[in-house]
Image (cartoon, rainbow, N blue to C red; front, side):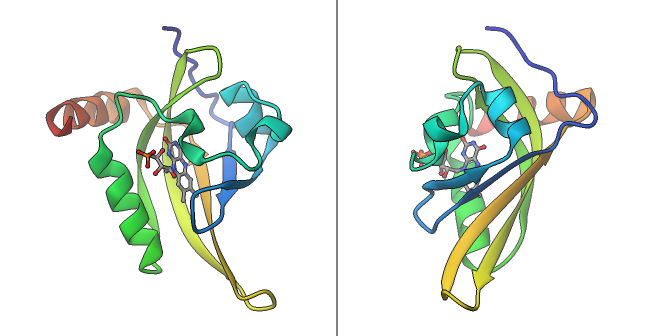
Length: 127
Ligand SMILES: Cc1cc2nc3c(=O)[nH]c(=O)nc-3n(C[C@H](O)[C@H](O)[C@H](O)COP(=O)(O)O)c2cc1C
């Protein structure tokens, strides 16, 4: 499996509804994941889930953002062609006063090699 290493100015953004359905993804997210925006919108965000990711990481992500707090952590994602990439993600809960809708937004940047090694070791113990 080929690893795509993020560039230092890559900034991958996606937004979901309360059920984890993708509402939006920016160009960097589409480019790195290997999907067009049309292929992503309306799909569950687990479309990019990598099997090495422990369930506990996403349980923590969802519990944190549903309680109105910001979650951050390291995520290994799968690309459309079967490769993978690591990100450091910060996930924000958002509330639209006009529509009364709750959504979530994840902003991802390049993690350092040390951070990837540490996350990999931790996730092995959780799987
Ligand atoms: C804003 C937001 C962004 C997310 N980004 C990712 C992501 O990049 N990769 C991923 O595997 N899961 C992501 N998730 C978590 C997924 O919704 C899902 O919980 C996870 O892929 C595990 O899939 P499963 O619930 O089918 O086991 C995100 C969730 C939210 C709210």
